[in-house]
Length: 270
Image 1: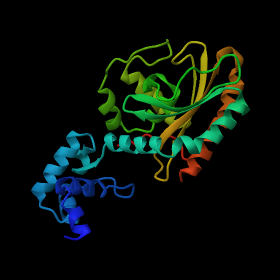
Image 2 (image 1 turned 60 degrees about the vertical axis):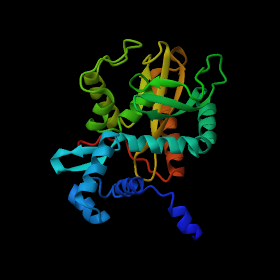
Image 3 (image 1 turned 180 degrees about the vertical axis):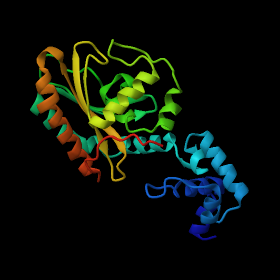
Image 4 (image 1 turned 60 degrees about the horizontal axis):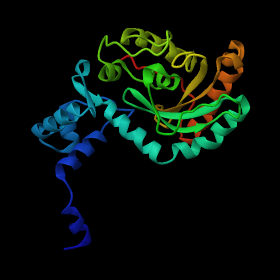
């Protein structure tokens, strides 16, 4: 048997078909109907139905009833986040985050989202007496953090509902933290329109933060950065002016290295 034939012995046909089906979805063609997928892949409708049912149950696809079809689900984004975190994102961001720390005197961080949490990939501590004690690998609830809000604001309503349900109570850490999903959704709409997040005592009293998203070539948010500082050390005009501009500039620089542009946060009305 040839080497190629020997390798083919270990192929799993069902897995191969499922992955080929997922690759049919793109930014240009985000929704597909079962019949179209069957024709594109050259598969029986019954096979495509089973693949769609399985991928939907696993969160890789979402049903779009208005279009009588399917679109990619949040589990696909999770795979992309893990890929970036394991490879290049921290290395790309390092010099830019170090420069941002030095320019602001604040601690700088990089994080990705894992469902309802953010996971810290990098931290560059302030050289001042009050430095962030967050470590790489630390998790915080996305709804209660500035970087989490940036990443959640990029999701559509179906993706948010998959994480939080509808009307679910949320854990509060300060009086600034949203107490339920309804308040969170309203907050995220404002965040998306603004394109960045400025917070005071949102997760921890006495701490201020500015966060912005990182985008790849598809325009999707693949991570977020922020600065954090003691509230008494930064006045409001500096926080929402100079510091906000520096954070957004740093996010654009990192995004450019990922092939992304400077598009604002978006929440698709789907």
